[in-house]
Image (tube, rainbow, N blue to C red):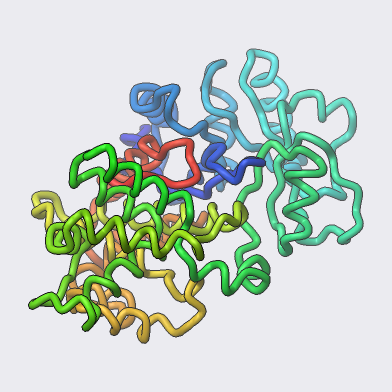
Length: 393
């Protein structure tokens, strides 16, 4: 008997980035406990109801033969694209199902190593491919217009997106990129600085200011450093973006932003790194208990947003966080891996991987309902703007 989809499937995600270094779509991992039989047609109906043209396109990435078979058998034309691993086509049943699914109009994506492409006849079934460069030679020939994963260097990134017009990159060569751009990564995004200055000039709402400020982890961090500096002389510690905006005043804020502008970063390759951190912040915020007040929700958002600051600032995370009068709950979750926010942060991190077993273990350990986790993930992804950043609520 098929079980309700969102209580039996285990989801995860990976952003797909385009040539503009903006969000092109999302690879949605699908896993399940081997003993369960999820209702895949119901899951597809949920996606159809939730998604809109403004939401990022999905590439469904089943992690088991069972789930791939169910998708190939039941997904109608017009469903999200479905990934088919090349080595799984050695299974005669899946091979026949993939051929039949393509014939009825389902869009399929072949996934495998660049050096192990399918034969010409089989390749005709696939609308695109997700090619792994992890084991490919540096000078290997790339195919135009395909999707790529396993990139290790910034040079590969340039070749795929700029030279070969890749449809998307799954993941990002963050480590190599930050080695090259360490100083620039520690600067706020020029785009966000200008956007906030324009919002102030237009007398937009406090919520809009907070959303823009929280859309760049470095800008948010530097803002909190400034509002808590001795030179500013505020009477009490500023522990949130909202409180800093209220206490600072818009004239002072505008002058501070003007000071940031000459050194602000314009490097497009850093945009996906910042945007992924914002997505983690949004997801961490959504995963906390229902009914939490807005002020605490914003606190949890900062917990997720600042959890990878060491990547951009190039210093130990504990040192960066201790410079701010943040709630001890944030420090506990990020550094100590304990406290009330730790389960939500750990779950947000686990959902960035295809490891469904880890997600299920966290649900069991912390009493989290899998259905609720899945719904919150889908809502975050649905609301992800097709921009360089994901605007917080």
